[in-house]
Image 1 (cartoon, rainbow, N blue to C red):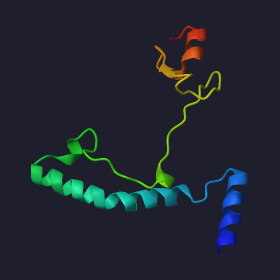
Image 2: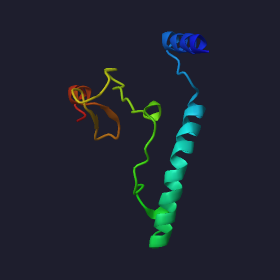
Image 3: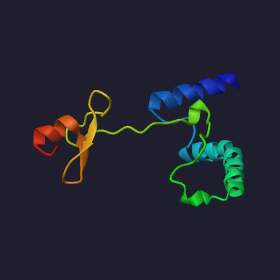
Image 4: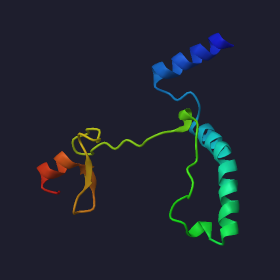
Length: 108
């Protein structure tokens, strides 16, 4: 069983594929978050607030490291990945892109 798991992990890594489907990851995250959300709903209900009117959840939902992701933004002009060295910005014309590309195009 351990050898099969290792072969599966290596094969997915070599092909650039996730080890589990996106739907499976969403399901696992929901199952992990459900007890925290139920407790939060109870607390909010007893406090008399409408939790649907809150702009964000009043608690942090802990998830396993394998379920934590971050978004990556790439500039559509220069195709560079934006980050702390190459920040993204919104142009006056309503589009987003890398700050350096926006400045080069006179949009920033």
